[in-house]
Image (cartoon, rainbow, N blue to C red; front, side, top):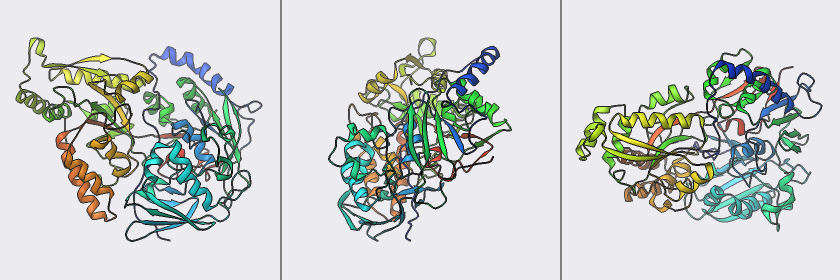
Length: 551
């Protein structure tokens, strides 16, 4: 089996998780205790009161309630949480982002990087009993995903020809070298869909979207809106002896306090930090009945930053942007606002992203350097010590983002930059940012393990596209950066890729297109009776085919 040592990562979400504003005061906490536990128990499916459930039922928080669970149509976090148990990709990825078998049992890549051959699991079948074959893979990647999945459309646009030598072999002939192509086959990036159900239909209106059919270890059974989604064991699963549990119940619990209480009481078995208040995490990790797991999510490489509109003066001057980097204490942000759930971001590549250069330039908190750069620009302090006034469009996702905005206002105020806050709702926020109607704001992007998959899109000038979120909304342009990102994706020579990406990091760290703030982690909390929850770099979005329960 040829398994190139490569690192990849898919999409999880872009600012999809709402973090509610913090609760304050013991009285409110005590008041919510009973309500939280009651709400959690009410969220159980009918006739399944806690303590009466079968030993092999897994209960998982699902928040917010997904719009759909058909994974090809949505890559939002709740859809991936549920859909990742129903659907599968050709590959999975370990904690070091190396590809692992899934629906493809082996693969090989030609030396010139232009031919990829996958051997499929021969006993894989769809949940309706039809065989899974190479025809499904070709239909999924050539016909289905490019019409409904923006990231897959880009990845598979590099394919010139699809071939099926037999029912269990697929060959992709590339138009050009696309080095991170093996990273395109994770379940969130390319969930395999059944050709016999979707061919010649309106993909978005197909009735199967409401009762999805995959090859995964769990089959869809029912969805009671506002209550729960139930999946049951796939008895015909291709991996012998798996899965190890009978069913998964995804509990839809809107209130953050109720979710926390459900986890603490045992009404649910699994929740992630995105389901909880960050300030509750220290208490939860001291709970003897809970286990905190920090692994999982490496594939996504979530980066939180202060976004800068380069079309606005003085934000078009790199000295001003460097001053912002020196004026902000990223250690404080991680410790005091994110309660340790993350690490300081030091540059454009997260530490989990392939070709991250740990030796590149660092910006430590240094108010004197910030002041000197602002003075050099001629931005002298005026009345009240103010040098300039800028508007900060706040993130509409509450919780730590609101606290982060207050910190940024105070931090920049110390060097004479006055910040005026702007507020809006989620829809208007996305519209304003995508249409460049902001001066400063916050954003999160996923890096998908490889610079060609998740980093370059934020900095290359070809991706300055008005009206499109998660593009180069800053308006940053550098011809050499464009060239280096192109060079890095167009060769399979690892040394050549590293050279290109080292140089691009040096340039970006000098020009500071955005202020990198935090590498966002996603700890998972689970009941101690649950084993093997996190087994790879996509965390809770994995299939759960190996999860087991102690009785």
